[in-house]
Figure (tube, rainbow, N blue to C red):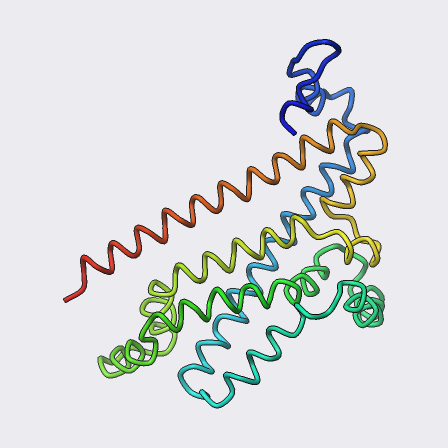
Length: 239
């Protein structure tokens, strides 16, 4: 992909990359930048859904309602068995109501992406919960007088950091690579914008695709370093 973007006649140059930043081409590449901005917003909202809704629910079920773990797992993993087109058929009436009530902005698409990323995020978080004595840590903190917000944010979250970061990475990767739902619901994200621009300039589409792959790679490396640092810290502070 990199070699393709550097082709310039019989040689290679950075002209294709420089063209993306040329003010004279601003109108030509406007859908690309708009799609990228929309995807970043969707990624942030989707990660917020995973960290603020899914993760606390899983911790609550583990601590207070262990009998509900299997039903929760079934619900969380169900979307992976449904094709995107089936999800769109079911979500279309919902988004029709959302569009009439709140407008046709792109941010509500994060609700669908939260459902799409939920199976992968659930597995990442649950593996971290299973590897950590969540119940023991919570009971010890409560015994020492900590409230539930303190238990969740200062006791459990640091110990579940690896799983939470992995779930966040997976959510970002799902959002950056998703095309079907956005296309069928007539919303613009990075992938739909790449399709539009590809018809005019294949080089620009490949450049943005390459940059998105590199972004996910950098996130993966950062999460690996943070997870390894957390593991060393836990071993150092252990008895």
